Image (cartoon, rainbow, N blue to C red; front, side):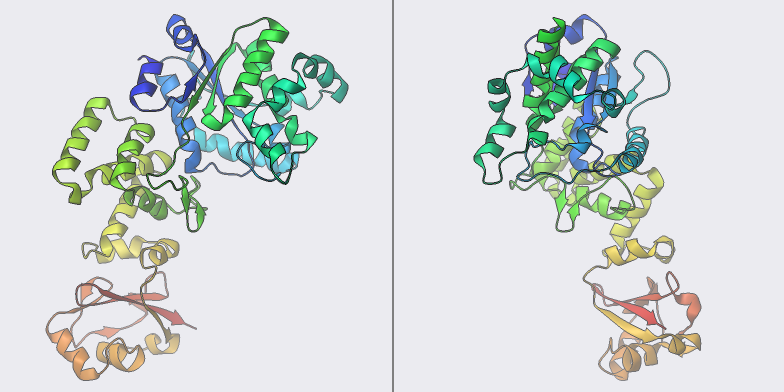
Length: 427
């Protein structure tokens, strides 16, 4: 597989230094991407760079994932209007371990010449004295060169300015590339387009300090078709960690992508071939209302990041609101997913003592929850088969008890085809 050609047709190349493609065609090449461990989870904004490493490994090259234990203590000014809070080593080490577990779902760290490796730049900078850094790194690059970088210039022109700490960030990242070039044979650094300045600082340092030739490659920053920031919802980032973003909400993010976004995302975030994607786009064009692009995209990424079981649960949960879910599906949902599915649905409370005994459905619907305005209306709808409790049709003779409760404290009532009510049992 031609790595550059693969990225090119997927729309994943923004900038590339001269000679990069020739280098990758000439020999097996080691390349790296850096991740600052400022959180214990990556988010979907990181997915484009992760997929670059995936394609690199599939093409037979060797990927390195660099955890910025040192640079994470400084903070990259790129794209930031203010300086970050600094993290201590204990937190950074914990975050590194969590990130590696997430990357293991994408990359093969096990064996072979192309096996992925994880490195932490804190390991080679922790004993580096300030004087040695100035002598061995700082002297090779001029202030003029550093100030010309967009990330630095924009901060200097802003009202907040830039500290010496962040100003030095590109030197530290440049030294990472230099160290990996010299000690691990890494000749290529990749990243998002906002990292171009930091990356070429590394190639320049390698040229001046070691007399070597190294290469740079960036992918476009992903944005939505409406110009919004990719990976952001009203609640914030969409995380890869299921504790931060549930598999259901993760699945929903992709399922709700616009047609224009889905066309881009399916190329950049799945391993489907050009032929498979072409066929998918044709099917979508013929019947856009079926949303085959979005459903395929959501399936592929949810399985990769979480699991097939999580995907099936999320897909089945998504069908509940459209009348296709079952009682068994409901019972399998954890509380977080249940509440996420029925977010915005009217909720009402019911005292636990009422459900502890046998509770007739008409009393429940009319007198206790007021889902129906009168007992007569409730009886009429029950006779017509228009009431469901936990996705099962209810009759006038039905008596409710604690065995009906979802997660031990919820009842789902459906009135007609589209009206849902979530009843929460209160102690």
